Length: 212
Image (cartoon, rainbow, N blue to C red):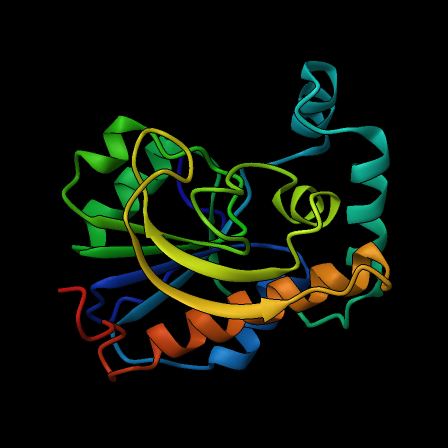
């Protein structure tokens, strides 16, 4: 299956894969054009997947509602004209077609499989809670429930085990138990955005120094 929109044909070596939601579009907007960086939406998630997670007990109905309310409260940004992938096979094809050496994930719902890791590209994920203590889904809510308010967003290597790879960089933030879930989630994602923007803009190639 081909991507749903054309990609730039200029030489690239770094891919940013983000969710097509208000936070993902905010990141793309704030990042602007970066030499050597290809930007792409991850459209692998759907409400069908959310329902499956609810049935499994991986997410609770109340948390899904809180997350959706938080999304509606964020500023909206227009969707840029960038491509999209829907599964691991499309991501593998994109990496090979453009000679991608590093992939950054932000709020990507895609579960990265062995075929992607076997391309040789370095896969990095931004997770907006401390690892290894608060990995996986609902991490911000779990940290709040535990009263663990001093947190950090983390940039870590992606492995076949979710949120278990080596942590490469962090960005601290502090939550407030007196504030709403949405307000605390905003603090967490603001930290994640700061972290990722800093890493992506360290040099003009899009490769942060120190991780090569």
